[in-house]
Amino acid sequence: MVNYKAVVEYDGTEYCGFQIQPDSKATIQGCLQEALGQVAGYKVSINYAGRTDAGVHALHQVVNFKLNQEIDVYRFQWSLNCVLPQDICIRDISRVGCDFDARRDAVRRIYSYYVVNGNVQSVFLRKYSILITQKLDLEMMQKAARLFIGRKDFRAFGNQAEYGSTVRTVYSFHITGNSDNLIIFNIEASSFLYNMVRIMVGTILELGKGLRTLESIEKALEARDRELAGKTAPAKGLFLTKVLY
Image (cartoon, rainbow, N blue to C red; front, top):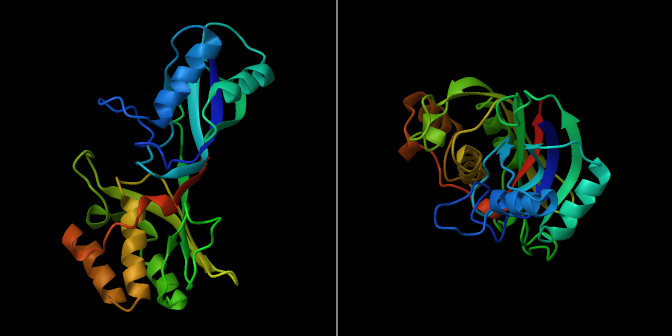
């Protein structure tokens, strides 16, 4: 068996998340495995670095799969992209060691969240960002982002039911704005709890609107109480931006 690593980009708008669902609804994993089967001529399963939720996008999802034979990487990539839906694209394929696992070997993941803070939503960003017309306090939100950096228990900022531990390490959390009223949240961590990024963003946006204080975020972290954190931000503004190995 020959092991291959692939970088995948996708628009998650029309999908019920990355992972295959028991109800057979459209998923990114399902489309990828179907395409791999068509091109390879036999059933192929994949491992993946991160399980994105319904409506979440990716610029740099990483998967690995094993084939019975060595392939011409360029031709195989081209063939896959010909049979995949137009909202899924294989950006790169490379041969890796037989022990490489896209999920297990990932050491950091970076997510980005996009917010348009103005009176009008850009037609080009409508599917990939949320619109907030109320003026946000960017400086205060940047202060809040720093509260999340470090190794902490994020029980208040995720659905922990399926995890043995809610402790995660956040390496960096930057919030930037530009002249086009676009605010970008960039968060890098070892891994994330279910909905963790969207809950952190939703909580900070409440702060930016003046609906909560920095102290309330500190209290939520300390108390580890989901009820003290903010609402979950909509999925469409979230991107898996990079996976590091």
